[in-house]
Image 1 (cartoon, rainbow, N blue to C red):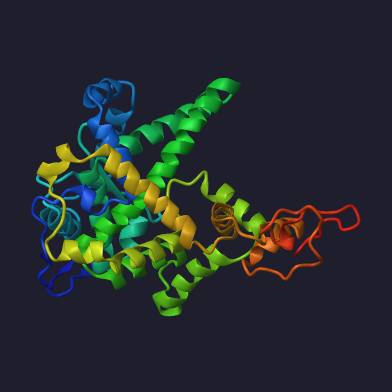
Image 2: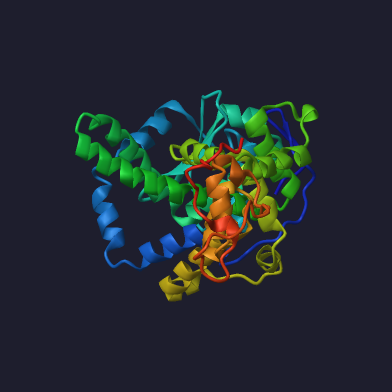
Length: 381
């Protein structure tokens, strides 16, 4: 625990008691989409053997040697304050073997957990210089959460496949196949980042510090110029703003990313912190690691599907509203299609524009008729 002293210019906060979670399973904090994929993979017979065979093809040894030779390994003699945080995080999440951590010279604030046989954690100097003690504690907990979940394996594979895609870009079908796998892995990894954010909160146990850290990653070390509430309002505006065109652009913007957008991560973490699931964990009621072998793949996929359905149902995004309307058989859907993409900026139904066409079936709103020759679709901008 922190002792209130200074380490390398970083002032530690006074020591305070944090809850510990003996034997906690990563299923306790994993996003449903992340959890379902991991449970399924863990159930595959021979899964570990296959990935150990792959380790000879992947550049894991090269990465380990690179960080060992060209970065600073965290210990009680180097970056001691980070070493204390790392050991604390492993103690709180009951991770028996403390993974090695390296500080890499890079002005961009970043951190990652990679490795097939054993995870290693890497943080950049840009991140170390940007965050204060409690903010950094949440980040270290985030990476330890990746290690506990086994995310480092898939992160390493993603790095390898991304590199491979560049090498075979001249082969149309080969590149297409690899990029399809990379796209699927990125979608999973974005959900795994939400899981790790939750692990960071369980370690730091300070929601405001987690929020500040994400805000600094987005806007730099100008905390006096920023406001957490205003930052979260950006996430709400991002989700609800615009029309279908903006929804498509959001998808295109996020596809090449391995991480969700920072405002979205902050909003998702705050939402999870207010749930009963989080409170139960803090009260000591959570899935145990020795029960992982009994976890049901079917139940996990059902929870994942329910989570996605809930996101669609409650989302304010115009595209998600359209999907929800189609599922619910909204009466004004045809009218909104006729009015063009701009018609999806609002879900409020519009009054009928004329009498019902002859031959229309009972119970059908006049707003569902198709466009007529004399009434072409209009841009609803």
